[in-house]
Figure 1: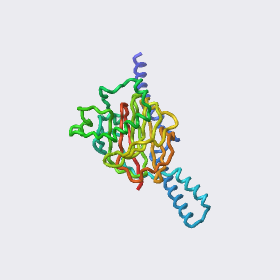
Figure 2: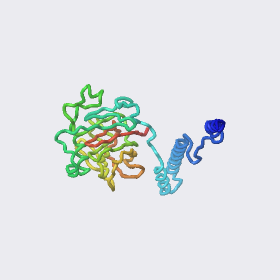
Figure 3: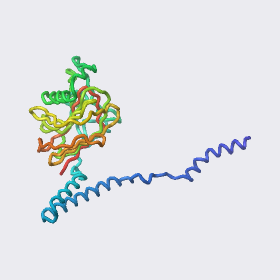
Figure 4: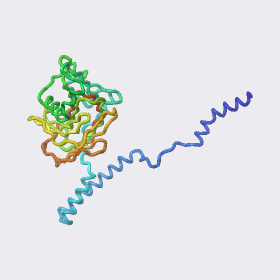
Length: 312
């Protein structure tokens, strides 16, 4: 019996060694190798550049039917990504939003939620109602315009202590949170976002701005259960450019992807989780933008990642 017990123990210790000799690490043959996707994207962009150059040459020498050349341009445009210069990238993994790149809080409070991102912390004032009945009285469009109007018409000065803590002051609790980062953004841009929403209240806006007062620019406005809106903000106020065909709901505590592109001719597209929401033209702004601004009112939004690309 003693000998049998020793043999069983020895076999238990030797099994992993035999398994290591018998089996090797398996790699999925259908999974792209590291770096392959980047190389393929680079080759595709090189092909598009050559196609556009050949189309330009053929057009100048009148070597092909103009309708055929137009079709070639449309084909190239469908696969081209002219926004190849990285202007801003932040996943807030360093735990500090005041540097690299620096974000400036102008209303409310913000903090870094570990492994999640930049989180707006709203402390409602005594006059605010948090009941569902009160929220239903305000449409997503009215709420978005009210938020934007408050930002455009009210400048909240930040005390010295606020710059260190991300607090815009405790003496008067604002009805919204606002934060921005000053970074030159070309008129044609691509903005990539990952964000999550943790309650079904309030609203959220983000977009590029022009001017030190941050009163002009574009805004994407989201309200839980409402339709996404694309806004145009100027010194005279805000107006709605377009509204999504169906409501959006991010309140599943998962990160949702948004991509917003603008071309040199004013063509803009917005997609949410790889589904196109907007495809339109707007030429209201012809100059570069001066930064990116975010506004939150009553919601619990976490920005996990943001990247902005521009053109040379």
